Image (tube, rainbow, N blue to C red; front, side, top):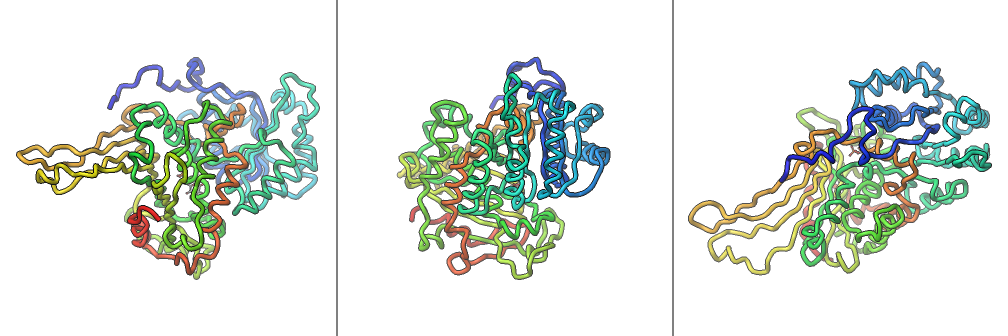
Length: 517
Ligand code: BG6
């Protein structure tokens, strides 16, 4: 495939806003990050905002107010963020801009139930130093542990922060928005509660439920690839597709987040969120228009079309696993039960493979396999379609041992790209078929680094584009489908153990072999 990219696709350099293909710069605003001492702020949020700045997309009048329990001064906070940017941003070579960036960074220490804290935030937001240059625009970011989401939302209302812009004096009218991190609830009931709480305080169009997989270039490309190429669009149905395999393999374990992971497990941490996003984008119908409402409508329809799993279906619909001591990339690693904060008898899954069916015109009869695993042999996220074979294998008669199914693989990460497998005549006097791959690699073609997922999503939330965020009904429907898998499955789907650094439990192949229920 082509490796020369037309110049219109080249990414502008630092500070270059002249290219009209590139996203619009953000308006001025204050971003209030609750949970500002956490890993997410340090590793993702601040580096992403800094990269937006380096790309010339962040308005110079952007204020960032970090809020967390640990006491520290503005200066200490800025110092921490400087080293975070040097370590985690895409632009460590442009650290010279940090001096300007940090002028807009502030810190406020408080517990999330402290009335004085919210009063102080309100005073800050209304002060001339904030209100005037930011034109009153406010974005709250909930990056705390999920148990703090509801108390913070209630306090935003009680202390008149959520409606700080209700009296419109300015033109244009300033916005108030809120980004809520995943996991959004831990089951249907808690997701509904959280939706109810947040929608009592904000309207749906102010709420941005984030799933960072939607910010990944290659995830967005699933739609572009499917819907801009007639050749592939026409194959994208049960007439041609035999099975679809969506997999997120990670080499990392629980990375010091034992307490959280023990509560969540792989089904809540990865499947209900990231894998469902990949599933909906892979399976949805073309939207009537490429805009938030239409795209979200189609995604919800996919989830609502999932065949509900009855108790008796569970054994053939899921395999759950947990890693034991092993080696990843040659380095010895602990078993899950020996990780910090994990009980030695934990039966929390770190691996799951689900077999689901979409009961609609396009996909009836095609099994979709969703697999997620920690401490696997490799880091790899794939959407893999296996196409049906001819009912008659002509070349088997001509001496070829087998037929080769066509396969399409969208590599979401790493080594982002797309490959198509087909059969080809092996050179020589026989009709033996060889499988060969036609391969497209993003890196070879573009040679530029794509923006990080959080850059794209923060940018979109600031400019008010909710296309890449989950809507309330999407979240609730996905929890509703997941309900049968979230109970006690000890008997219906016993936990299978796999050695860290391998491909997961052997039992997973049993699901793959059964094509229909
Ligand atoms: C997070 C999960 O949402 O996604 C983590 O909580 C997981 O457990 C991470 O490791 C994976 O993200 P990525 O972008 O590295 O694939």
